[in-house]
Length: 101
Length: 400
Image 1 (spheres, rainbow over the protein chains, first blue to last red):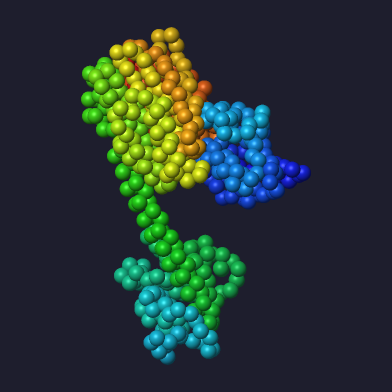
Image 2: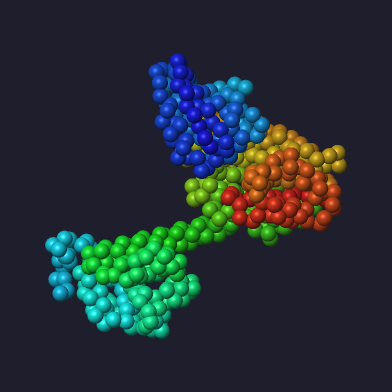
């Protein structure tokens, strides 16, 4: 997995790409470290570049959502496609995540 | 000349570090003056277990008898063919890691290259200076003991993982038990469970509910390794404590497991699960699912993926699940599997995927083989190998 973080007015975008798997736990901690901002600041995971996510990867989305909640930030997932989109649909993530196409 | 016991050895009044008195060194040198000098240097490093070889022919035998931790090897012909000795030592697998320090009076780069090519760990130029000699001996001995520690640690972890794998295997229903359940209901149940080298979090079980109903449960704890395996054991314990009345209602059972797992698991850990109750009297499979891979159902009217979408167990509090129904009449089969089947990578880095799997199952089914699961797994092993990074669970249930 590779990531790029872009912080702008009112939101921080995290662009994830490649394959997000068990091996990416350490890298993901750096992503989580960027979860900062004033009340209501929005964290966005952009998954357009992401080709695959395994069960550990989906667990990382859950951790991200939990971190955002605890720090009073908004959290949104956008741009999932193909396999990634299928996996988050199977897991019914739309029930607890803010998801945008 | 030897250091006082208890006080660190010194040279030029410099503390040379922890004495290496547990270590053994073999000095292979044809000059008695050199042997004595080197032995004296070693005493400054606290090394007193020293033996000697005077000519090439002796060295291999001395190494095998004395088991040195390091060899100081001279390269001056004719009586000491250091290059030849070094090569011979390296040809023996158990001496591959033995530190060999060569002493050389020839300081050309060409000669040094020949020494390293022969397998020398390091080279000390002659005349040998005590400070440098001690520093290099110490460095290579310390490096060697680090490698040994790592190797021992690795062996211990591998033993633990092997043990964990065999414990995990014991959770899977035994063949006798499967036959006992399958036979009276005109079912054929083939199953295959393969634990990954690192152990994983797969778990499945099968049980009788009454004369016509059986329960089939398959789960996969997120992640890999010991954490996933321990969570699989926790899930197994939760399952075995459920009152039998709850086994009839898959949605209620998953909601119950979700509540319990939610209390136990840390954020980001969860389980995918599928639980179905097959009634052979009504031909109906009632199931609920928590984001498991879609099982494949093969019936007279075609082959289809059974929708197994649902929120993971243990990830979100208070989640509810729904019961869904699908007809599984005699002559049909149901195939359940864990994601290692579709998500393993082949040599080109490609996954089989759900579409690929469905195509393979169609092939296998059309070929009319007796044991479709074996055929499917053979094909899988040929393309993805047998050492997968995740547990692989597959269950093929055929109704007659």
